[in-house]
Image 1: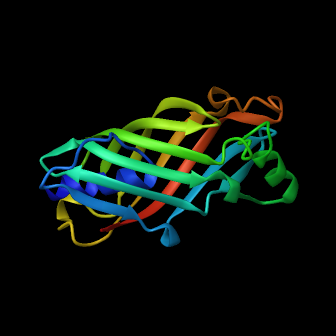
Image 2 (image 1 turned 30 degrees about the horizontal axis):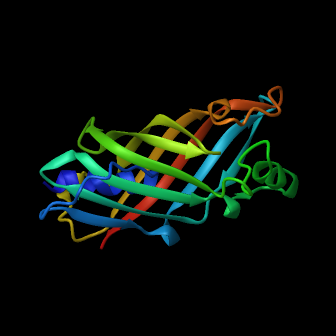
Length: 193
C-alpha cells in the first residue's frame, strides 16, 4: 500500500495523469515546486550541449493504494518562464522554431500507468504535450528511498529521466546544429495534501 502511494507521488513530478475518480482510500500529493528541478538537454554541434530549465511547474496526483497502476497525475510546466544559459539560446527556445511560447505557453505531462521495476525504480507511461502535439512517452524513475517505506504522511523524493525526439513535437529547426534527442531530467519532491 505504501509503495503504491509513493509511486503515485513520483508521477506528479514528471507530469502524468489518468483522470480516474478518486476512491475513499485515495492519497493525494502535490509537487513542491520550490525544491524541485526540471531541465531539458540537447546536443549542440555534436560536441557540446545546451540545457534549458523550467523553474515554474505545478501538479497534482491522486493514487488509489489498492490500484497503483490506475493513477490521476497532471503536471504543467510554464514554458514562458523557461531559462537558458544565454540570451540567444533563450530567444530561440521561446520562439516559433522551438517551444513557440506565445502560441503554446505550457508543456504538460499526463500519466496513466506505472510499473515498478525494482524496490526503488519504476517506469511511468503517459502523454507529453508540447507545441500542441501529444505523444506517448515513458519516464524512468528512481526513488531516494523504497516507496514501500513511506507512510503516506511524509514527502517523497526521486529523480527521473525521459528521452524524446524533438522533431516529433514540431521542433525541426537547426537540424545540422542541434541534436534530435532531448533528455528531460527531473529532480522532484512530492508532499501530501
